[in-house]
Amino acid sequence: MNAPVGKELEDARAKAQEEHRALHSRIGRLSDDAIDLILRKARSHYAWTEKPISDELLHELYDITINGATSMNTLPARFIFVKTPEGKERLAKSLKPQNVAKMMGAPVTAIIAHDMDFWHELPFLFPHEDRRHLFDGNPEYSEDTAYRNGTLQGAYFMVAARALGLDVGAMSGFSNAIVDEEFFAGTSLKSNFLCNIGYADESALFQKLPRFPFEKVCTFA
Image 1: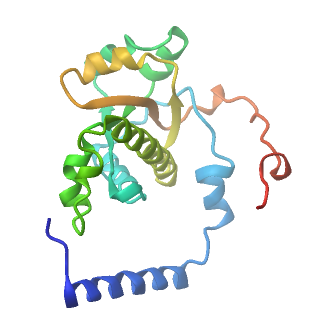
Image 2 (image 1 turned 180 degrees about the horizontal axis):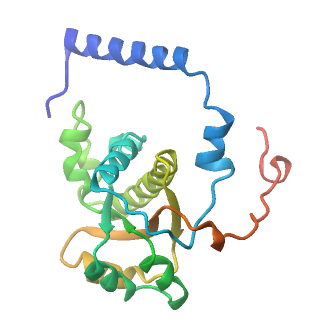
């Protein structure tokens, strides 16, 4: 653990605060087109063009995703990019039949997983206070933290992919147990969900399904 202290800590905090003020002074909000791209008019996709995704773009996608906030900066998500024919065949073993073609046709399928031993990395990720004792010997709390924050990072991942011009199609129609046995046997990783990534073939889209109005699901307290 090597956290800044004293004047170094004051300077680091002052720099972070100024950078945030400067960001908001430059960008008050995203454009309507940008919001449409990442959420409002974004769609889940099931068919893909043959346009490839470079490893450099996957690195950029990760570099954006990793900046999303997590509890105590735990960052428990782990991303396995399945792109080879051999990897796809292994992953196909876990899928429900109707999802095999969706996955096999995508340039890349990400397994969004989380590391149950994430807390061992806290001296690096959360250096100003040792909180490993909160998780050591407390598997229920560790699993709850890993699952919640790993899921949150999966959502960041999808939004970041769309921001880079990619299309995504998340899938839960698969066996987590088979994925874990095939890819994570003997490790502390557990799968959460799958996410196909690529450039969509829009001919497979259907109309957007209904969404609730504000009044149905939102209240004030």
